[in-house]
Image (cartoon, rainbow, N blue to C red; front, side, top):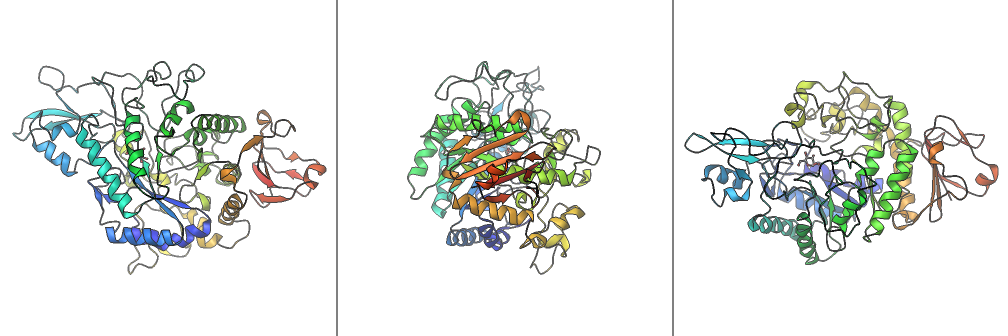
Length: 552
Ligand code: GLC
């Protein structure tokens, strides 16, 4: 599955790419029921990935290269193999150890029915019934995700102090921040009322009417009326108290430590409440990710996000893919490039890979010119597509099993990167004594995306990303201010053209399938600094379809 020494060996590659921080998904002790998001010991590295000493070595080397390290924190649930849950299982109903989780008696004459109607995000019931120590069927425990991920009881002060101690454990080791998993979870509505909405994570919970839901950023009231219907387990008011406490913990440390929320919360006004000055520092902007390849949707996502973050004085973030979503290169190559499939299998529509890549590079040229923090998912820089034909028996995502294959799941975006096109597993275990096959097989097409095939090749996706990131830093775009070029008539999202200025740079993107003629004066006044693809600008001074350029 890869390991921490492997990460260490690629720090130079990341430095050369031009990033300044790395977020690592969970490497803690875990039975891997959900790719490490089921933690059995928050203070140790899983032997699959190495040791605490390997972590320290990685951190030291990263810092020597001026790369910051952000680790994943999973506070909503533990693994059912965590010591606390093992104790809770063995203990009696009502005991202190059970009170660290959410145990309830079942309904029905014999307690044979779950305590409420909540469904797991991964499909199926969100409750599992225990067999008590004496062999009789007993209480039920809540798990918003897999059966092997029992939810912690955040009303219990012991849970709060333990998680703060975990934060300190990693801060003491020198980490620069935490990506907070399911940051909108943890607190559940009092009485755990039934809920008829569809439990989902990646779409967020769609606002029924976002016009009605434009709740002000400092509103303290629950999201009544803006959800359909409001969820009793996500985005509860009480969660903010936790982040205010964590903000204080981080303040005890030197440097610029940070928290970034993974919170699928809509609308943007609701999301930015997680990044008020005394809470977290950043939150992933999933509206941008969900916009897809569409000039109007992307414009709206950018405008909304910038306005919302401004209201709380925090920076915006931008992201197009992550380990929970179909890679954007693939999504943009589907007949509906704003669609959001939950995984793709061989039975589904297959993407136009070349078109998807063209668009993905243009979208990256837009994203990397925006003010705020841009997050890349590993392999974005190689233009990597989703593995869309993985065999069912190889799939490991619990959502695939729990929905009996109805939801294809997230394995297709998690396939290991191709480093060397001629090596077994495309060099995934490069340098090992016995090179092994990667934990998920790569499609053959990955050979053409291998890092060694792109390194130093002008016009390759890797070189394009390196160039864009270097310019982003040179022009200090992250700290800049965006201005849509509406007045000059350039920015016309309804005509598939997106255009803005950030400081000295002008960005122009053509989402359409026709070349866009640019006036000679326009081009003469400016120098082209970046092309999303080598032929982005034609000899006749036209901006090619599905392309973007930066001018200064
Ligand atoms: C987050 C993670 C996802 C995980 C889930 C449960 O959404 O990104 O991978 O399955 O939380 O921890």
